[in-house]
Length: 480
Image 1 (tube, rainbow, N blue to C red):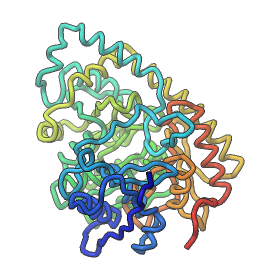
Image 2 (image 1 turned 180 degrees about the vertical axis):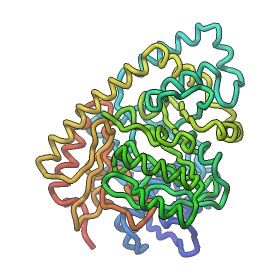
Image 3 (image 1 turned 45 degrees about the horizontal axis):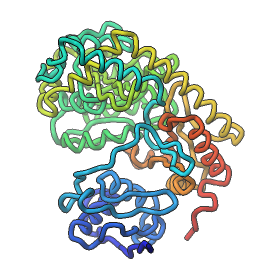
Image 4 (image 1 turned 120 degrees about the horizontal axis):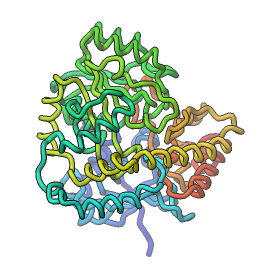
């Protein structure tokens, strides 16, 4: 059967917001109106970019956004196709009603793309450990309580386990000041919700976690990106902004920064803690990667306990689907944070939290963490073997699950990402992390934990290194 490629030029002149989202919105409208049939192949990235006068990266992000909504599906080497209306959309904005299940880890078959766009730990013993814990939980006389409503902040035993886990980073953490959230992103949400009002501006790094943007939108907040260097957020820039704007909060990912991998030194953490105290700014410190790093500095919360909400998550250190977030902060902020949990989800799942408690109490969590550290170290070696001989410019501290690779001029990161996908390796857009457009870098984040097998990592890194050596876009892309 011949697949017809759609001649489609979306009109985004009257659309507001980022161009990539406007393109995805027009696509959703056209699908909902029946103007585009299921199975139709959308125009290639470069062709549509040429027609609209935008960058290839913009089209890549638009198609990724459409795929996230369940509107389209993409296959490496074949293109992007409109999915069936029944499984993809509901209404003019293309809200997903049936999104395909993601594999537990990236597929390892040679003819499948290697997904190195998502940042979570490599597989280990956690699947077998979860089965054991669940069997024990089902036999427990307390099992009925895990299927019932519980306190918004979490069951007492779960808060105690969460506090013990957080104490690895912040000694002295107590259950009284610790809440159980539905993942790290939810922990950040409740922290910001507790200390901000709609219309306010939150300071953060110029390059930061992409999910922060959606949190800010939902809370009616704006974001201001502050200058960074190789050590992360610059204290002087933070203080100057505090003097002129008095922000209610600073959000930071500094152990390491996502995506630049900068690990902020202890001296700088102390300086930022002092500034926050001086100007009464609450720091939301996203610490979800820190337990994987070798010799990670103490969190900023250790230097400013009265002005910091520290957030971590089991998803980035133990298992991506274990949606247990932990947020600890000053006693005065706990009621507002608990109210935010009540308003957003009622409570984190007691069943999931009980698995986490079991792992912490039995020492399983420590064993899983060590397994992940060993596997990450092995995958670092695979990366270095391929990119060090090329004298590549990258940042990858010990324990980080990804490498931040600079693309040499005059090549563009968007072209590198597109060429990588054509060669069977999926990378995320670096533009998703940009808070301050002036700080955008021609760099890509290469996530090493997602593929299940090392052989898949090797195959993907071989392709990425060859592409890097050829000069970014290689021979895959025609230049207009």
